[in-house]
Image (cartoon, rainbow, N blue to C red; front, side, top):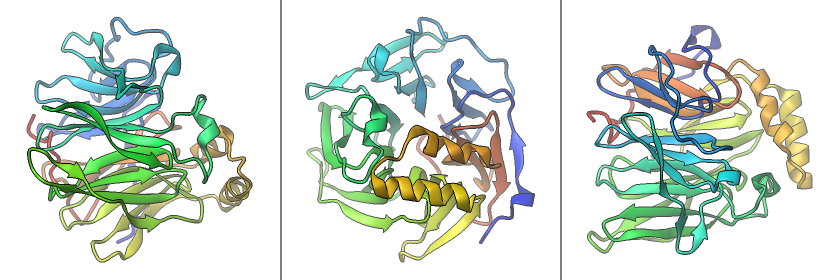
Length: 318
């Protein structure tokens, strides 16, 4: 299965860094937006109330109460996870865990058991100083009935993390570690994460950002810079779902990465392609066969039909 670029259409307009996308069974499509926090496509943008200066929405999660949890990349206002209520007013929700400030909070998601998972990309400030293959100081935290705590550490720039549909594994993208890894979830009430397993290691300009699951057990990974979406089967076989790479940009980024000098400019260079630095994958539509791609450098979302349905996400019927 490979999608031709000519079959891709676009939805939305005037979006500001629509990095994270959420679709629901009701046909709603929510995106992260630097101008208003979270925006529902097809409706007017709502001004975010009480927003601190420097707030930058990244990953978003829809709660059972139909509010939003938002990962804040803005270190000047303390980073952290914030809650957006029904009046579009913002409140700090979790600003530190185990004494560690969440200054580079990248992503937040809620699993089928109601646990909230949070990715902290790096402890370095500014976070661009960790755009290399030797820094591995990111972590994953969780908040559940036992409180908030760090459950996995030593990760090479923690990006999106999600519990798979079986509930048995936590998958994590390590963007500048250039791998997707997973941790077994062991036990019930006093559960813990087991030892990390590497699922796939990336090359050729692929730096894994977002991930999601399909109904056949495949993992879809959005790779910035290369503008590729890659599917990893349960067998380990890897295929390209869609791509729009620029070989010259990739060669330049690879050289800088090898030298340990990869920069924000190298990462942003992928925004010149039609997929605009693809960053995330969401399945929607009544049959979960419509794919929406978030991005870092555009103002709308690419979308296409997939022959493979997505796995039903925990928030589908919220």
